[in-house]
Length: 93
Image (cartoon, rainbow, N blue to C red; front, top):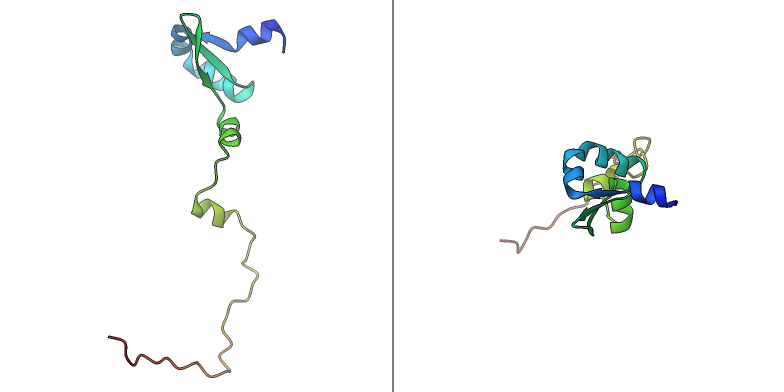
């Protein structure tokens, strides 16, 4: 990364607030954007994919299930030719 490119990733806080949409777009398209206050680095704005990679974020349970293989071709019908197993509810209150 050149010095010019590095300078382009730094935003003074006031400018970052005024041009927030651009900062977000550039974080998504170009990579992390550093926000400074009084010349000190105070924050980094990352695209969501980079953030998730760094965090090691796991999908929630629903996303996990939906990301699995397509099971629609499986035959999950029960064979009704065999007798059903009996259930003993004796002793259960």
